[in-house]
Length: 175
Image 1 (cartoon, one colour):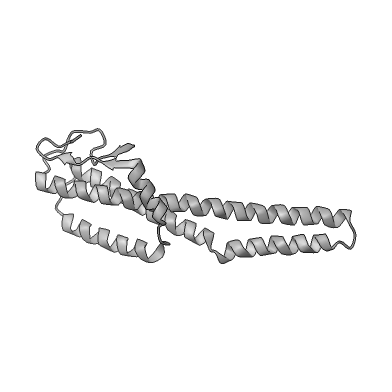
Image 2 (image 1 turned 90 degrees about the vertical axis):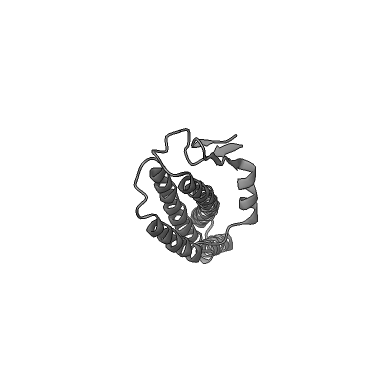
């Protein structure tokens, strides 16, 4: 199990107030989940997209070989139809669009994680409320564009990661 913490080994918080540090820590834990879910979904869709595209190309190539070897072959016609069907299924399921939307979601959320760590390491928090509004807008956009997350992905996160809340007195992860 891997530990998830806002400070990631660094113990300097550059004078961030304990209350703000607690808020940032909670946001980091939440957005780490929101980053991991679409990342896993991206690899899921990428695998199926590659599988179906490769299968369609293999079937069509096989039909070309069969067509040159056997004249008047119904096998070539059947293989060509099957290859077209597999490619059509891939397009129908929109795996490439789902892949792109999941990539957008996890890269955007990754930038949020970086920004949260930047706040802890010394960036002034003058615009923190604006930052929270931006996060809400991004989250709404991601929710609208990305496909739903599978339950098994949510369960896998809990088995793979453990959030270490910060000890707010000295700004270090509590074990």
